[in-house]
Length: 172
Image (tube, rainbow, N blue to C red; front, side):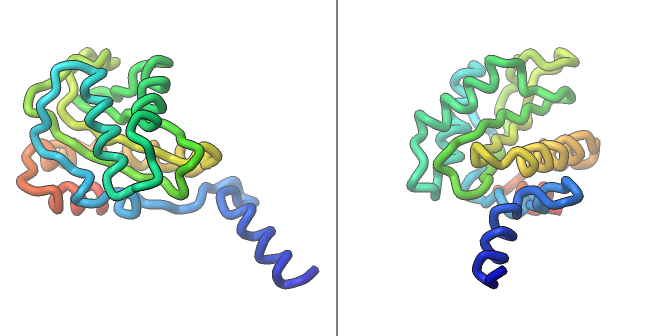
């Protein structure tokens, strides 16, 4: 087998290894201070998804905000992406995306979001992944759920003073 074919085979299988472990992408790899907003003002779930879509397309010129909004909205129609304890992780898949991207916001006022514990949300992490990145999508959702299940992490995020702080807290 040629070296080129071997490399092509490795690249094709990069998102699924023989042990079924997803490629290791961390939150720090997908979040930048430019996609963080502190104290966002929104009054509805739809408006929040529009704003998260706007954040996700920042610095990503090949993405259309309307396409991103529909990806988030369509996923939300399947069931609330609120995970409880004041946190929501709206997420979606887009075919013309090269790698996962994230956005984070705190809300000025809590928003009813049909959370399983009926707690209005105040912390929101938007996640967008390439359409074919199944393992990576699940791995990032798992990592986010782990971060947001930590009381100290949620408290630190609720008291943010800068986008850099959000990236540091979520990236550790």
